[in-house]
Image (tube, rainbow, N blue to C red; front, side, top):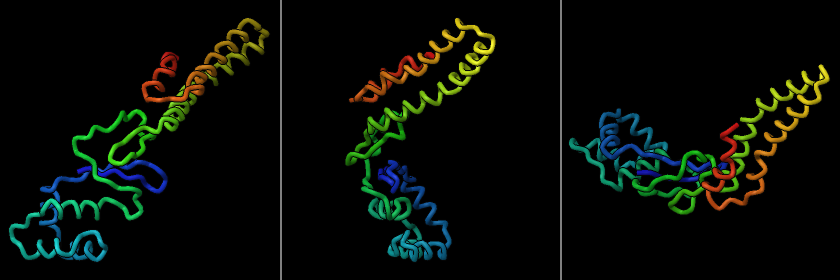
Length: 186
């Protein structure tokens, strides 16, 4: 069983619940005082705990199992929680931070994915620009104009690497990746 929802800060959460059998086994060996506390905290249905206490061969129905999962794993402030099919394939995790919920499916927020990629590029080129700044200062100290021009050209190429992506209005994750293919080279 899997459930998706958005948390209060807008992050999409995917819950992968333990199996019905594992839940049954855990409940069967849990001390009654702990089970009663979970009932008092609205994290277990009372009728399920009553079953555990009275039935020697305790078995959960699918409905009881789902009820427990929802109470145990889904916070009260979850936004639009829905169960998704166990066979549903989640999108590319490379842009996990850009996932958004659309009913019972997960999509990419393409603007968010674009911004994630821009930040990755900026972080990757930062040490390269810092090294080039040092190279420029060394060339400046000795008056090497040709080296200064070469460094300036290289720095501009690093700055320009984001231009194609910044100008893009993406319609797919593949477009974002294609727009930054040259990023992998530097």
